[in-house]
Structures are given as C-alpha cells and as structure tokens.
Amino acid sequence: LDQGGRRSSCPFSGSRLNLDRTMRFPSAKAVVLGAGVVGRALCRQIVARTQGRVEVLGMCDSTGAFVSQDLAAGRPLTSKQVLQACEYKENGNSLEGAPEGYGRRMNSLELVMGCPETRDESKSGVTIVVDASATLDTVPALKLAVARGFRVCSANKKPFADAPQAVFDELTRWPGSCRFESAAGACTPFVAAVQRLRNAGDEVRLWRGTMSGTLGYLSTGLRDGAPFSSVLKAAIDGGYTEPDCREDLSGMDVARKAVILHRVLGFKAELADLDVRALFPERLRGVPYEEFLDRVCDKGELDADMAGMAAEARDDGCVLQYVAKRSIGGALEVAMVPVRLESPIGQLRG
Image 1 (cartoon, one colour):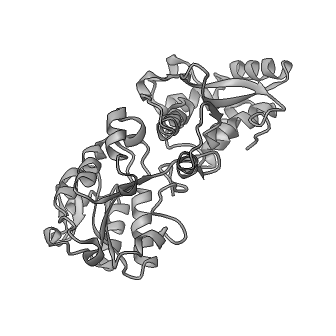
Image 2 (cartoon, one colour):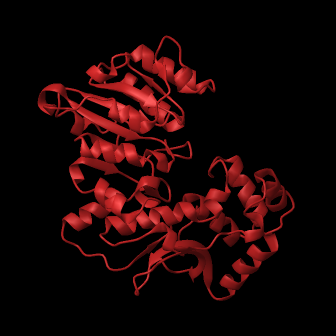
Image 3 (cartoon, helix red, strand yellow):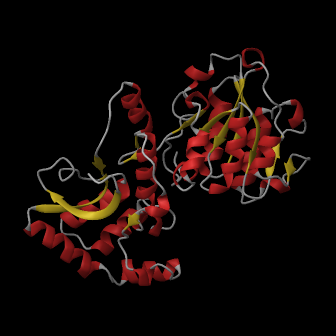
C-alpha cells in the first residue's frame, strides 16, 4: 500500500502489521484518518490478521466518519461493521451518509477529539491514530493525538514535509509516540534507517540520492534512447505514477521526501524554500490533465528537449538522474541532473 495505491511505507502495515510492538499491550484501538485505498486496505488487514487484538474505533474521509455509536466510551466497531464501512466507501459514497446511524458529519480533528483518553495502557490498551490520507488537513488531529497521549502512525508525507518545521518538531518531540515512514526507489523505507544512524551517534553532513522509483524508470528509458512520451505512457499504464502524473514530474514528491530526510537528520528545512525543477515547462502546469497527456504523451511535445538533455549527458560520459541532495553549503537541491555513469547513482536502473 502507498498513497499512489500500490505499496505502503506505513509502519502499521505489512505481512504482520508490525504488531510486535503493539502486542506489549492487552489490545489496541485504531482511529483511521483516510478511507481511500490505503485506509480501507489497512482496516481489512486489521480485521483479517489481528485476531481481535487491534480494533477500529472509526474511520473518516474528507467529509465525514463511520464511527462506533458509543465512541465516547471507547466501544469499537465490530469486524462486520468495519468491512461494511470499507465496502460503503468503495462504492463511491461519503462515510457521513452511512446507514444505521454509523455515519456522521465529522472531520479528522473531531474524530480524535471524540475518542476517550487512555489512562492506563497496560489495562485498557493503546489508542493509535493512523494517518492514511494524503492531505495536510490531518495536522490538527495529529497534534491533538500527541498532546492527549495517543500514538500516531502515518503513511502520509504531507504533515512531515509540507507543514512548517515547528509542526514537525511538535509531532516528533516524543519519538515513541509518533512513527512515520517514507520510501525511496523501489518502496525502500529510509526514515527508520536514518533514525538508527543518529541513535548510534553517527553524524551525516552530506547526502544525495534518487528518491523516486517513477522518475528512475523515466531516467532509464531516456538512457536507453526511448522517447520521453512513450516511457511516460508506459509508466502511467503500468500504474507507476500518481493518478495525476504531474505530481511525479513536478518533483514535489521527491522534494517532500528530501525535506523529511533532512529533518530526520536533525537539520531545519521548509518545503517552500526548495528550488524544485519540474520535468515539464511552466506552460503545461495549469492546463487540464487530459490536455497535458495529449500534448506530452500523444504529440510528444517534450520529446526533443528530453532527448537533447540525454544526448548531452551521454556525450559527457553521464546519464540523467533526478537527484535530491544536501550540498556543502547546506542547501537542499532537487533536479534532473547529469551524473557520472560509473558513479553509484549513475549505475541505478529501473
């Protein structure tokens, strides 16, 4: 699972849902923010794999929530009700309209606010607020959850990248209460690895890397001489891109990962301060998506420019890669640049 609908870097997912940590408590109650592909898949895994040790108090979408009728008392939804909520949302409905009184007009903050406080985790279990959305709107809910002593688990990059540094600091002040993850390349998580480096006392002064499997796929196609239009179309057809591929091509997904990595390493960074260079010109940024696809994929409007960049890099013994790095001066840079073919980054394919 991930926010693109394929896999997940959420610490609360996977073959065993990472329940080793949770099982120290008699039980856990999950509050799921986001009822898209990721949120629904997580709820179904909770029902199928946790044997009742993890229960769902409620889940919300952008307009409403499906919650227990006795939320304030901490009474969870039954497994049947959780599956009903997933099916109801999957059929294109808003959760606020769910039948039998389970649907309420309630945002993520109100949902967290309606949950009872946990007084003794060793007896009543732990409450975990899971952000499976793709929006900044969950930030107030996550801040409240941390303040109330709930655990936070997030597969959503935006609260940790798009929000100001002060919000990141507030959410991560107590490491045991907030867990989040992000992935680079072929869904390889990096936050936990970097945190282990810091915990071991290692100081990272400079870093660079490719942080998008989608852009890596495009770079490999250009290296092999394929037209940019055909490589992008194959990526879209293969489900490698976001629903709007401009999210990938703009470089913003890489920029968010770079900010998260930078902040986890202990540096200060604001997404708005980054100079992010997109793979398409400004004239295509505001056009309707269908027009963008027609001009770029069908008519090949960018083919000549991209082929020229690839050829120029090849003549210099380099290949194109979309790279994020912290330079010696301390600034973050995110752009498609030529890198030496024999370098570790230059050897990456796929």
